[in-house]
Length: 392
Image (cartoon, rainbow, N blue to C red; front, side, top):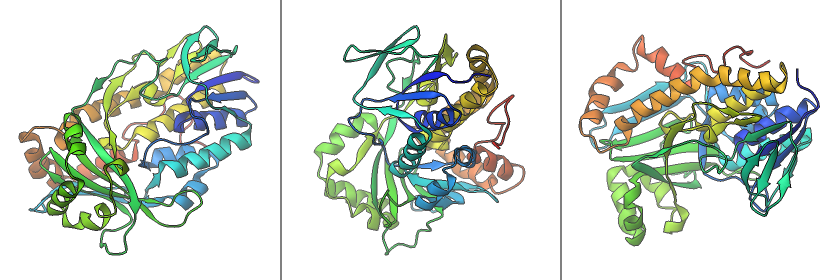
């Protein structure tokens, strides 16, 4: 068992904060470095799936997260115009928590600080040399008994090789309108084949606010982004309203191109998630499209696995246990993401036809329904192997 370690974490995102909070609670000296001038999140809404929520429960932030988020019991999608079912997944007796990234970040940041983590801003980590981090300002930071790269898909530390995906999405956070019949307990999406997709996700409220919010998104080819920005916003808004009339009260709140952020997606997985005394977690270790909604959950599970392993083994053995614990789960979800994404975002005409006429009609029935429930929940296979699950 490792105790009283000095641990350096590059990246103050969901995975870095979760790991830092967990390790600091066990008495380790934890420093988290990030390039921001003051702690702040990046992104809009996300879904904490049931497996991720179990990690939040173990960290002691589940109630705070649930108070700011929205319980999601269903994921529902139809084809534009015809209304033909394209996606139908229920969580059964469980639920996901849809939340603005800022609210999840706020809960984890407070817990990390309360547990004793030192958050060091204005420090961009660009390299690792032995037991030291090197920052862009030339500072040499350390030595550390363990170094962790939690700096995301743009990491300068990770050897991860990724393939950019052809499709991304425009995202924005808006107020939940009174003039809508859309339910606030589900992710709702509308498709036009696999080339167009609009979605609405209830995400609770922002830190310090009570107004209920929604994350809205619109699928877009990355190559078409510049043309979209150059065209009048009103024309795009009208096209989205024609595509999905119920989208109107959400999208009408947007008055500028700048209120929408273009999310670009990549796919890639590290073969080895450790290197010496360095561990890679979250998007620095594996990244994928958001179709399965597992990005934040994978980071939380990585943090839980690494933190738990360090509570049971010396550093070298803990890193091996972390690799072992996460290998199968990461591989299975990365594979599912690679296979399923083209059914929802691609130029294919055949795959969405199969989605609507074969996959979706079967989804409510046994044995497909319970399998899809577990896929969405994040535990179609055990999330960690060789470690206690669910967390105590």
